[in-house]
Image: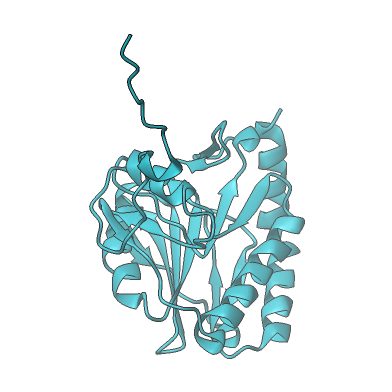
Length: 236
């Protein structure tokens, strides 16, 4: 009887999952497969089928403004039942796009929001609001992402341009993004999230006291109380 030597399967001979690399052209499923195989990777995005990976994050140009932006949104959500805020959540928009916005705010599915949370804990569909800190990413945030968010009907899109220390806040009107104009006091007001008021120049300058005071005015407004009532009614 002839005995054949059958080679043992070693770990190195098993198929490996290729790493994500900037500019890879992938389907969304393949993007997620590779992303999940890289648990140490903090951020990667699929925009129009192309992988984008951010540069190292600087303090003044991203980390601190990001914290201030999240702080503003979280303070609103704490006083608005039926609204949720996410920090760097991957969003399944369509077959070629899975961005990871710096901040996301949604009307929770129980309150009839347009996005939903999937069984594997992703956000799927268009959030009501996304926000980006645009430093090294300014070109993509104001071009490719702008078009992707608009096409997928993200209702409001806020971009904080770090080089100019300016904030652009767009709302979707008849399929197009139009800038939200500040009122006579310089306050920007959300249409989708009534009571979400922003002192844009104060936020850009790091004046969080003024940002908080303006937000408090919005949270005490009649339209915010009416919005809370509508969310409660729709959740029943």
